[in-house]
Length: 152
Image (cartoon, rainbow, N blue to C red; front, side, top):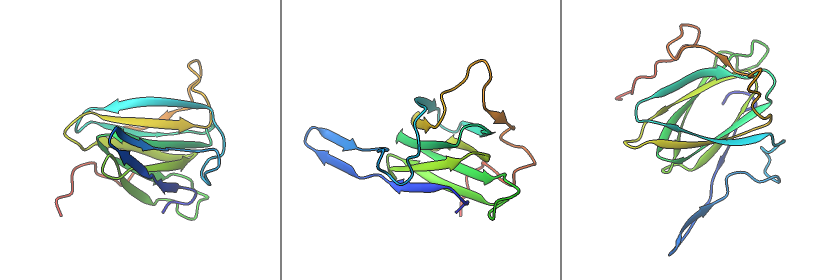
């Protein structure tokens, strides 16, 4: 796993009314601080990648409906895992939250047949006048990753 990345399997509590699951608590090991929570969606097959943050210290990602393939690339030259790629298949069939440290490139692809819904919990609120988002195209040669489905 890329240095500094943390994951937590979410406990789903079902009853006759529906389901409940806690995403992140302030007493979780991966919780450090709170800046903003937002929801984004992905249509099936759409890739939203790549980006990283310089100011934001972490970005915790949880897919609550549908499924996504979340991919991380360690872009930090001083990291012991520099150049490493991690894949996580998260969503309603694998309720997981992944905390991504600053400078780690990340993105995801909608892999379910329906629109996926992703919640991000970040350390800093989004600054509309000076966004802390550094982007690269999803098919950049700088990251050794192919977004196509792997039929193994």
